[in-house]
Length: 325
Image (cartoon, rainbow, N blue to C red; front, side):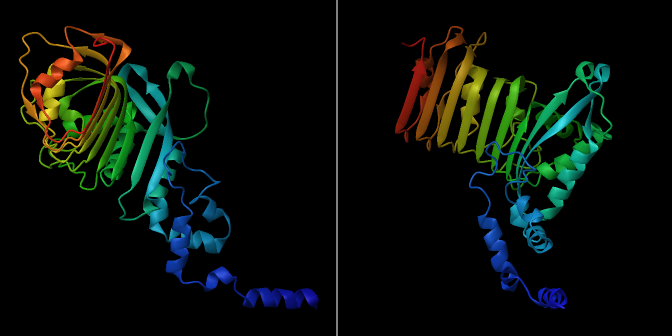
């Protein structure tokens, strides 16, 4: 009799949290998010929101899934298998692709913050796996559609190669990133040219405000006739890059609204028959340029760059160069 009464009481009573309005519950759940959700915290993380909230009870799961802002930040590492080395073919694990698809569906129309990296498994070192795989070519369109909704996009070399290749090859489609304000490119000593640093199409101007590039070689591409519109950039950071003198001046001329610039340079060369171009940056107030002790410099002194720059708003300047000391 006692247990029967207790069962009836529990079935007709509600937990205190269930009496709160759904909007209040959503706000509480949003406040559970870490302040820096993409800082070395790859999802799925069952010990933090939003995944933790879905494992407490069915009611909390319902509220979590009904709160799109919980799902607009994703940092995820794909395991990528090499399937045909001679053709450069790759495949993703099916369960990982399905997870990202489910995650995307939860945040609906809110522009997400995305960090995607790859854990490459080469054929020679591949272990036996019974998980289903999906060819990378079949996933690129879905991922690119996802990337185009982002406001913050942090990709490694593997994903940037495919994004830029797809944009370059599919000229009939207008790839547009209308929400994108921050781009981080972890390029792993690859080589890229000026027009293809920011993902966009030639028909759609870029709205990117912040650009961070690591470990790559930057140069000009004289064959490209239509440069991208980079007038929206206000912050740039190049970490461990190799570049040429003509690149840096051409790049600075392409970002007239730049306010902060940080350059850490590992190699600096000056091309043959190079004629410097004058550059004016009316809004640049902070500029930091450093050459590491082992930086390779060919016929170039860091201080000579400033003979070609006019910086009327500059109030913070930091220069570090072993060659100038």
